[in-house]
Every structure is written in C-alpha cells, then in structure tokens.
Length: 382
Image (spheres, one colour):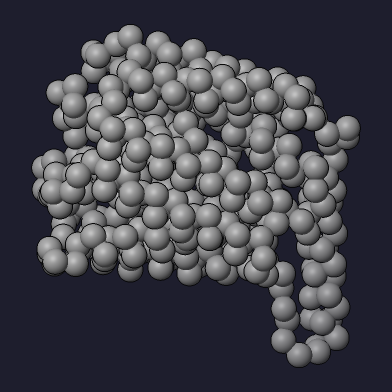
C-alpha cells in the first residue's frame, strides 16, 4: 500500500519542489543502481544463513524510519539521497521473499504460489493508489502522505514478526536443479542412441540460454522504466489531467496487474509466453501515441492501454521469476532482481531524458523498440 501510494507521489513531489524530469531520472536510476548491489548482498546473505525472516523485518522497519525522515526535508538533493538509501533496504525483503516462496512449495506449484503472492501485493498497491487518489482530492500536505507511508511500513515490520516463518529445510531449488540435470542427461542419451541406430531425426535437448534470458529480462525492464518513470508527468502536463485523475489511471493499471496475477495462477502458461508478452507490450506502448493525439478519447484510450500493460506485466513477471528460481545457482538468487534493477536503472535515466529533450512521442517509440528487442532476445533464448 505504501509503495503504491509513493509510486505516483514521489515524481509529482519532486516536480512540486522545483525538480526537473532529468532529476527524476537521476533519482530513480541512482536508487535502482544501488538496488543491484543490494540484491546480490541480500540474496547471498539469505542463502548463506538459510534465514529469510530477519531480512524482511529489517527491510520494513528501515523503510518506516527513512520515510519518516523524508517528512522533514524539502531539498531535492537530500530527497534523491534518501530515496536511493530507501531502495537499498527495500531489496532486503525482495530476494528473501522469492527464496521463501520457492522453498515453501514444490516446483509444480511455484507459478501458482508466486501469482497468489503478487496478486495480494498488487491489491495492496492498488489500495495505496486509491488512498493517494483520496488524499490528493482532499488537498492534504505532502508530509501527511509520507507519514502515512511510514506508518504502513511500521505495521508491515510488526506483522512480519508474527506472520512469517522460515522454512524448516532448504532443498527444493537444489532438487529442481538435479531433476533438470537428469532430464538433460536423458535427452543426450536418447539423441546418442538415435544417432548410432540411424533412426529418424536427432532431437537434441538444448538448455535455456541463461545469458540470453537475462539480456531479454534487462531489455524488458528497461523498456518498462523508460515508459513508466516519466508517465505521471505526461498524464498531468501533456494531457492536462488533474492529479486525482492521474492516480485513478494508475489504479486501473494496477487493477490490470491484479487480473494478470490471478490468470497466472489459473492458466497453464509456458516459457514461450514470455516473448509474446514482450511483443504485446511493444504494441500497447505505441497506442499511447494515439492517446496523446486524440484529445476527445485520451482518458478512455489511456485507461484501456494501462490496464492491458498491467495485465501483461503481471504474466511476464510470474513466468520469468519462476524460471529464474529454476535455473539460477544457489547463492545467486539476487540475479533476477539484478536484471530487474539494471534494466530499471537504464530506463529510469533514459526515459525522462528522452521526454525532456525530444518529447513523449519519441519516448513511446523508444520504449516500444526496446520491448521489441526483448521479444527477439527472449524468443531466441527460449
């Protein structure tokens, strides 16, 4: 709920303090670059200690303290610094959470478990934006909104003490890797037997390209940040929408995410869906150009595009997260978050820069081409 509220509030707050689009990009990219180191650190510590709960508690408690500190400053430089530090401790719960879920369920239930978790958190995200919609309509001070976010994180830290339990044994991911090795060996044996007996075509079982997979993820998350980092400014300034309407549109985007996570847990999706979702996001991004051109339909068209963008992201996130838990080695679980953060850092800097220097039409074209790059890379890798 807290971060759903902050996702729209922080860019608008930076502009209200006199900051520019470039400063928003610097703030977002600096925070995400720091998150890369944090992902590796927290992922390593989680696997090394075999504990998840302490890092989740530390994350929520530290975020509560930092958000309370933000209520005391109106300096853009200090805001950027505190936001980056907040991102570092935010990652303290992300990777341990992924490990906790993977070790609490059998492999065949991972997609369902991750989808259920993400659906619940997306509902919280949506609730936070609805709160932001209400608070902005009431015209409350920025310090009050930040204080609300601080209290929500404090509640999360307290609840984590009672509601989170570390797994008794950590073995499920290692078991999955053993199964993959056996399947690969079996596939190689069958291919060798067919070759020696001259029977039919030789079907060689090829491992997923981990490097290609990671590059495809980086491209996808880069495109996502290119699009979404300056998007609140596009809606409020270029489309001349009220702040409460901006919150409402992002609520629709979050609602699409809820539907997407629900579908991810119900449908039998495969790895091939990854690159198809990237292609869909490519097309949807181009439709935002039409939303800016057609003033009479701008709200309706933008709402529809944001809904399906949220739905597509949710499906992509669940499939890529489950696959990463399957193929990444022990101690390197933070790599998934690293790809997300690296792509986010690039996109968060490039997006506002393109919007400020060239305009939002070129921004949408750039994001669409980057989604297309992700589609091609993931299709080859998968």
